[in-house]
Image (cartoon, rainbow, N blue to C red; front, side, top):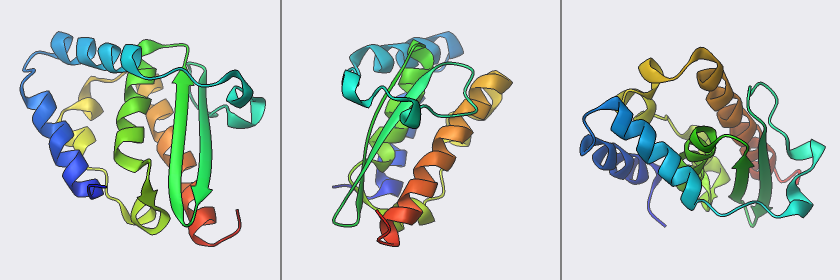
Length: 141
């Protein structure tokens, strides 16, 4: 598995080919469309991410100290944002997830082009993932 910093570098490179924001939004929507749907069994109240305007489910698993994630949303842009987070974090050691400095948001301009509601939802997803990684690293899961 590639390191988190290398995955972020690839995301930055992928977005660099899309200079216009309408192209970047289209790419996020495409990522959302291509992301696999979340199994109905995981579409539970417990897996809903609080703080998102859209409905977002985040299923988390800890396997031998590694974080595994699946997600879905009723918004394709949000589902695309979640797909980016899963690309970065899923399959990574919990300690690496905890220490990760997410630089790709700013590097590709997401921090300036997302609505405040979507930015808050994105941060809520990151907080949920990091909180889970802390429990996974601590062996409490």
